[in-house]
View 1 (cartoon, rainbow, N blue to C red):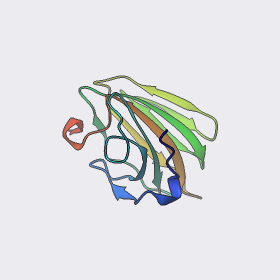
View 2: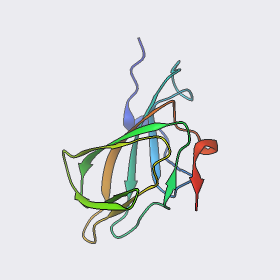
View 3: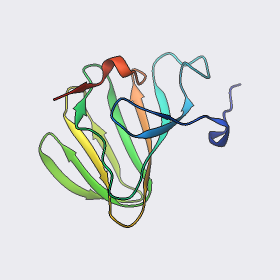
Length: 119
């Protein structure tokens, strides 16, 4: 049985500019088809707008508020919101001005810097 504690995972910066801690992926478990990470952005900061050719993503907002843009459509997001990001969809999330935003990010296939593309 694999049980990973999020607080024991070292944070790193992804290709899009967010700070993540990988909870379960191929770097810390025998994961083959998906990855789960916690991402955070300081107040007022945003990821670089990007897309993934292969990975389908789900963002689940844990704390904070922000703005999610997906293929030109923008909406306000906050705790309890889950966002589906299909492969090939341009997207960007921005933290609100008052506090950092924290979210869980599930990717299938697993997140890879090589599958992150920019304008």
